[in-house]
Each structure stands twice: as C-alpha cells, then as structure tokens.
Image 1 (cartoon, rainbow, N blue to C red):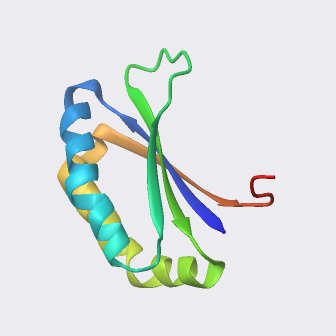
Image 2 (tube, rainbow, N blue to C red; image 1 turned 90 degrees about the vertical axis):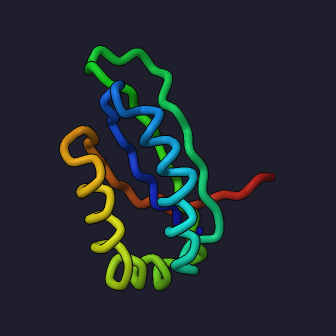
Length: 104
C-alpha cells in the first residue's frame, strides 16, 4: 500500500470553499482516475502561528505502478485545476508513504 499524502496550507478566507471543493469535486476526480482506492482528510491541529490552517489529505493506492501512472496521466491536469481555482492562497507539500505494517 502506498499513501500519497498532500499537506495543504490554506488561507483562512477560503477554507470553507476549499473543503467543499475537495469533497465535491477534487476527491471524486481523484477516485475517478481509478488509481486510488480510498481518501481521507485530516485537519492538522498542532499549534500553528503561520496565518492559515493546514490539512493532510491522504490518497490510498494499491501499488507504486498505479501511483506512477497517476503522476504521468492525471497529476498535471488535476494540479492545474487547483492552481487555477485557488492560486497562491494554498501551499502544497507532497509526500509518498509506504505502509510497512498493517493492524496486528
């Protein structure tokens, strides 16, 4: 299992619009690529003095091959949509996580 974790630092003035867009448009589009099997959104609650709010959005992928296909076939278009809609009001930090241990 590979988890594509996208941390988004969102300007407070667009937080509600961004969350609605994520849930109603972006996540359904990500799942429609058929590269991901699940998604989760987490609000980061640690103390932040950065003037915004941060979220971690996890996209669960069965294997690296599907993830690489996403990066090549889908990522540029989907990233462009977010950039066009929100511009510099959101900063993204992307990481890839490999699941080592499942529940015991």
